Amino acid sequence: DVVMTQSPLSLPVTLGQPASISCRPSQSLVYSDGNTYLNWFQQRPGQSPRRLIYKVSNRDSGVPDRFSGSGSGTDFTLKISRVEAEDVGFYYCMQGTHWPYTFGQGTKLEIK
Amino acid sequence: EVQLVESGGGVVQPGGSLRLSCAVSGFTVSSNYMTWVRQAPGKGLEWVSVIYSSGSTFYIDSVKGRFTISRDNAKNTLYLQMNSLTAEDTAVYYCARQAGGSLDYWGQGTLVTVSS
Image 1 (cartoon, helix red, strand yellow):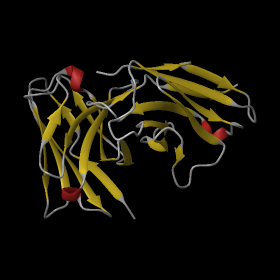
Image 2 (spheres, each protein chain N blue to C red; image 1 turned 60 degrees about the vertical axis):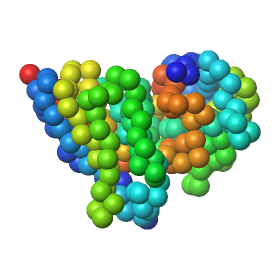
Image 3 (cartoon, rainbow over the protein chains, first blue to last red; image 1 turned 45 degrees about the vertical axis):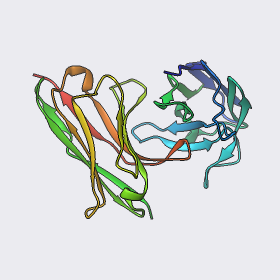
Image 4 (tube, rainbow over the protein chains, first blue to last red; image 1 turned 90 degrees about the vertical axis):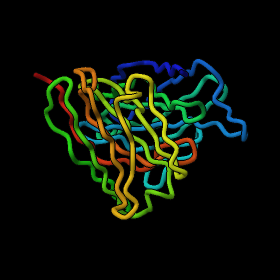
């Protein structure tokens, strides 16, 4: 199975400051169709996961533009340009290229 | 509006069985790939099983032979039959639609607790 390694696992951030989460898969996520199926999910306290980003950098409808995804190969990043209080929770990367789909361990974002 | 509503969770003894349901509105279950993902208390997410629109099914190794994913097209509902449960199966179970290498719609989850 593809191992997804996230860092950091804990991310204290001051309101209004940027935040960045890294995700490194154990192998390339480029599928035979040329797409890279790397996703980012947000899980607020007590809620189910919500997709933020798909195929590396595509933001879902309704997701604020302060969230952005980037990367290629085996190095991907989720960036929040200015953290707001509603961003508190866990963030997970997930690969959808290789079966079975696998998730990172999760990064806990909290307000400093 | 798309909605996925899980039910059927509860407390069950080790070795027992439980059937989870996921009632879907807003799209057709049988035309999509549908998955179950679980999250043990205080832990991360783990993809468990998928049923393709063709009816093909796949499972992670730890549940193979014990769990069965299925659907009822008339009810537009996804199921997960779980047998021979162990403490390691204790988790919140989410159903989700799998599309384009992603999971785009999720339910609210149902808690399964395996305990004597």
